[in-house]
Image (cartoon, rainbow, N blue to C red; front, side):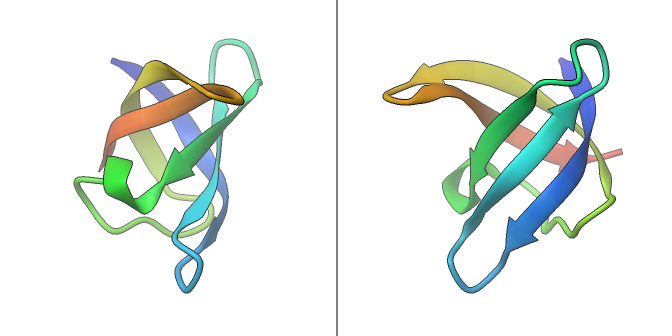
Length: 63
């Protein structure tokens, strides 16, 4: 599992971005990839999966 911080998450649209701790790369996250509700600045753990437009975060949990 990787770790990062939620940079942005729009609840009404159901998506946002996580900044990875190790690479500082922004990773897309969709509400379908969440196991917990998240808000901006939450610390999270997640797995990465290749998507159509780059990496997607899945199995996202608050830590």
